[in-house]
Length: 476
Image 1 (cartoon, rainbow, N blue to C red):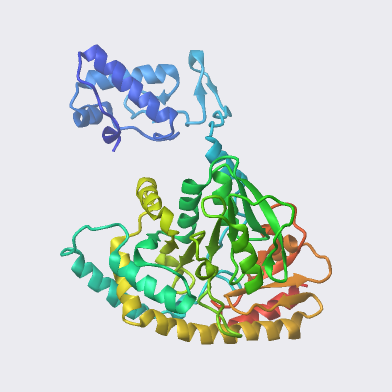
Image 2: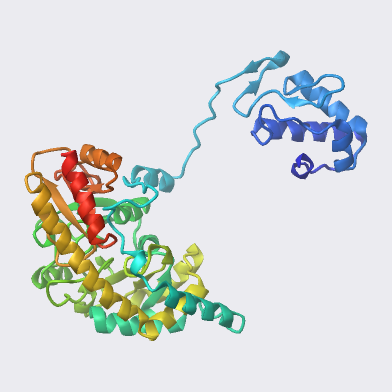
């Protein structure tokens, strides 16, 4: 209803005509009333606005004279131009005038420069990486936890934004399963792991600070620190993941994925971890450990988190539930060094990175009642078999084309192209054929040196993996 878009200032009739004309002109110029839109009759619009019919008639006549409306006796007026057309003097219409490019903040400009190379397609296609299998998640159990949390919500006090029950449950889980040193009050609950990186960047990084990230690596890390004005350097990998760079001054912050390097899945040795911890200094160099899929380790005992080796409060530990549960849980968490917890809690509130208390309480119950660990145990067995099935299939069908790097855990693997093919072109062919993957070169911070395919296995059943491999073989 057009009358709902108009707010008239009550004045004399002449003032009402001018004000109504101005508002209708603005609605047309901005595209709210598009070209070809038939307006109400003058009688109907006058009734809806509570003004005289003459007021509306005079406004329509003025806009027709200016070229905005086409009006004829006995017919309702029709919008004559669209929002991209500008009315020139004499009623002529000039089209194709482009609006000025908006001036962005330096923050927004840097975000655009670090645009992520991957856009998800729908529906899901094998072998999309980065996902667990939502079909294997105990949805009924989770739904019961959500229902109980909703029923209890009316009796709960508003309380802290980081719910104590979930912080306590997480602290117990991380201590026993990942070797993390974490008191409950060191844990912040956030909408995602990416939110944790943005919060760290906002609180720790000032423009011009040096930050090291893995290259190739997780694009969200570089994006968060670029956007805060850091000078981000991509550090090359060896067989143990990120390398220590002799001769380079220690940066303000180091971002790494030591348990399963993203994307290669390489495991950082204890000696290398100790080397990086020796490089860091409280208050000068901080380490951010992203343990995005550390729950899934198959070939040996899980390696404890880097954060658990830190006795001096130098390491932030970032985790997420989107890999271990389902991608739509949208909860992450951050273990903060003790000296910074007060500052980060204030920053969390001011930036607004607050997770639903309803979801937090449900998740606390899900963990405390043992459902989370039970799901993880089953998922580990399934994902282990699926990894081995994918590796065996690559060897059988695509050994001449691809060389798989078999990770000790995780939910995806890298298969490198042997013939010097460009991986971006290969990805396009595969997507067109119904197999979704990601180019390794798209994860490079600078000029890519490696070409390969990032293949997910956790989300896909063995029959789906086999079918995808046959399709891949036909594309090379």
